[in-house]
Amino acid sequence: MLSNIFLIKGKNFDDLNHLDIYSYPFDISGKEDSLFIKKIIEGHEKISKQNIENFRLDSIKYVLDTPISQKIEDQNIFSMGIDNQIVIGLIFADDDNPYDYKEIFEDLAYEMLINEECCFFEDEQEIENFLITLFIDIRRYGEEVLERYYEIAFQSSDIFTKVFLFGIDDVGKSSLIRRLKTGLFSENFYTPTKKFNIEYLQAEDGQLAIWDMPGNLKLRKNWLYGIQDTNILIYMIDISNQRSFKESKEEFWKIVNREEAKEIPLIIIANKVDLLNLNHQNQNEHLSRTKTELMNYFEFINLGNRPWQFIFSSVKTNYNLSKIIDSIFHIIEAK
Ligand SMILES: Nc1nc2c(ncn2[C@@H]2O[C@H](COP(=O)(O)OP(=O)(O)OP(=O)(O)O)[C@@H](O)[C@H]2O)c(=O)[nH]1
Ligand SMILES: [Mg+2]
Image 1: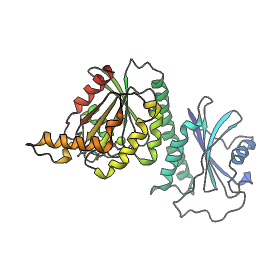
Image 2 (image 1 turned 90 degrees about the horizontal axis):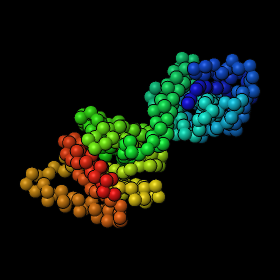
Image 3 (image 1 turned 90 degrees about the vertical axis):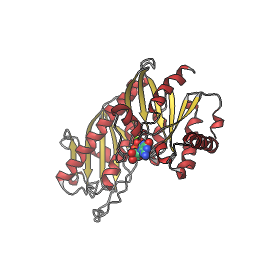
Image 4 (image 1 turned 30 degrees about the horizontal axis):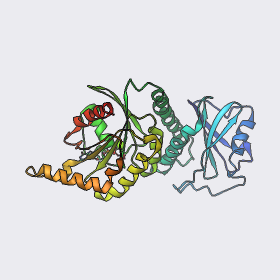
């Protein structure tokens, strides 16, 4: 578990006496052994060894180095340089793997540095707020995602069915889960998923652990962290957004063709059917035509022997949502 966060700031990292050191929740600057700080800095080859006067305070385009991992005095340190003039670091408990935190550390730091209330690292209060916020978010990620992940990964799958819900951004994955859990839906509820959400759902036929993946292009690599030991894959498409089909098709096959996903049952959900403006009279005809078009375009025919099913849905109007839940259990049972 993350135990501490620190920030070292200076214009010349060779001169330890002139470094500003902040940390939370406990103080590391009071360490008698300045070697500790020195070693952290030495790990960052690029950190400025000379006096640089023009720290880019007016710029919001910070350059963040890739975090490096070091073991110093029995402490597990993971630190990252910013603009050659700042080092932010995390201190972990012994049994943590800092690389589990690499993405969240980079993403959150980056996010906090480019948003409008970006930290300029001038004011002590501002730096402390920055550190506390980062600490709380990273620690929460450790507790809620990583620890639950390990917990879940090692539990027997008899207890619940693990559902891997994926699809490109904006198709309605998180809205589906929210609808199933709370009954709520809102057009304005658009909060792109950042890491992944794990939601538990008690259905009539059993308990589901649904792993809701982020669709954001940059975060799709996280899908590979969520796919292990999945009982069923659910792929979601936004049928109202044809321009995204090419991208969606590529992402679909990238995952479905992976060794981890081999033979795992699959449900394909074509969501946002409400936006098709179906005319009551020829609704079925229209849907069956759309289905054939999607089958051809996505080449679902190549899915081979794995059990799979195609379902139209609308999270907005509740169309076919209970069918999705029933199908999850049926398709797994039938396997
Ligand atoms: N009309 C309509 N809009 C929907 C439907 N389902 C979701 N939406 C809207 O689509 C938008 C995106 O929904 P999200 O659930 O956040 O999408 P997501 O797939 O989780 O997106 P990422 O987390 O970025 O991958 C929201 O504005 C939803 O209100 C639907 O069935 N019909
Ligand atoms: Mg989402």
